[in-house]
Image (cartoon, rainbow over all chains, first blue to last red; front, top):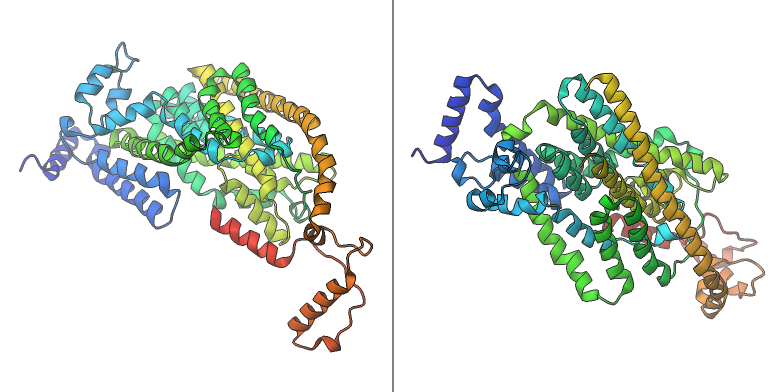
Length: 408
Length: 121
């Protein structure tokens, strides 16, 4: 009887109650409730279910009351200086001997393996054609990283005001504004591993909420006239250009921001696999099975780091608020430059494509399309918005590289 | 870290960081313009030739009064369409002039594209 989860939970609550730690008393039941809420959002509301469902279930698994030895996941092995060699290196021996199933799988996150592998598949599925046809899109993709640095700035100030965010925490929080899940996870696991669950959940939830977050900002920053601008059709892009593009990007980014290469290099390898057309078999694996397998591991283990002690903190609330600010400012940055481009080109650019510079592909581009179509039903902005959209992926990977280079 | 320190550190990082992001992407933009200059010229020369081989394309893209396409057929189609939508006979109608409105995509094409966009993502 004393080995059942229920007995465990009662015992935990008893100890916590004696210590007067209220958060711990409600911790386990509350986390199970949060996990169920996220499962509801994933299954019924269809919020990025491919990731949110595994994340939520990982959260459920990790918060089941169990003896320390039985647990599937021990986040402290990766975070607590007490368990780390010299306070900062992973003790692989201990993880192998004492870790549960999810600890072993989590190594793929901690060692930075999963996010680049996911980028292989994303690269294969991305068409850089609209970007090559309209190189100005790159500027919009850069402007939409504004939110990354705005949120970083605010996180630093909140940290100074007593929320306890360090510079590295602030950088990891800022990268939520890149609107790119794998990139956010890649930066956070290095700079602020303790904040990983909150940041991953915030990033993926806000990505799913883009159709709600962006349109009001878009309407505010544009006029009826600018929204209904019809853009010139994009030029056709030759195969040679499509093949050269990933190679050139890898070289250019590698020379300037080496820390961005593990993400961007994989993205471009995946893209080259498609555009070259000579390794179709490998490409099929990259965008299919490999990506699916990694997504399962990534989702479940990231969710599993969200134990009550890690997740039920004032920082989590701060991260959720700052994440929203990051998304809003990124949208703002893109639209601002979109408006400038509209003015400079004499009305040839529809500023709505600027908001697609946040990288969530293809959701953000689709929002541009829909908002534009409301003004002018015969206007098709989708392809024009895909340019800034894929540029945003490159932009946020570069921003991630900058943070890693500065604070690693 | 005090608030003043946080302000200066934050501003510095933001300027350097956003500056680097812009620098990298601007370099890529220049590379893309160079690529366009090298590769796009040939495409432009090929393009008109390709269109001439596919007359159906021409009808969709740009129907003007003087491009040599049989106008009678187009007017017959327009008359039939108007008659069908007004529930009347083609004998009661006479088309005096026509001009294209909007961006040149036929309505069914637009509906199809919209449906694809809504389903795909």
